[in-house]
Image 1: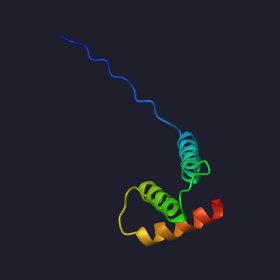
Image 2: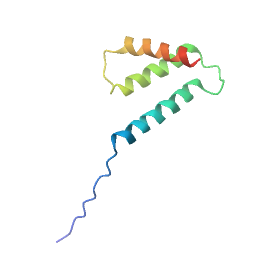
Image 3: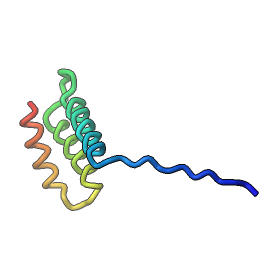
Length: 78
């Protein structure tokens, strides 16, 4: 008879999860801003809106809200 070893899954605390999300957001914003490249405003908004969609859990029907929020965020960042 074989013995199965069951490994416990390491669970993260809520604080650790929030920290990872914050780091991800910061890295994403840095990536969108770029390093002085000529990425235009619309492309930055598209990228930001996509990440808002992903963060929402890919829930459809909020595209206009995501776009408006993305425009606001990109204007603040520039």
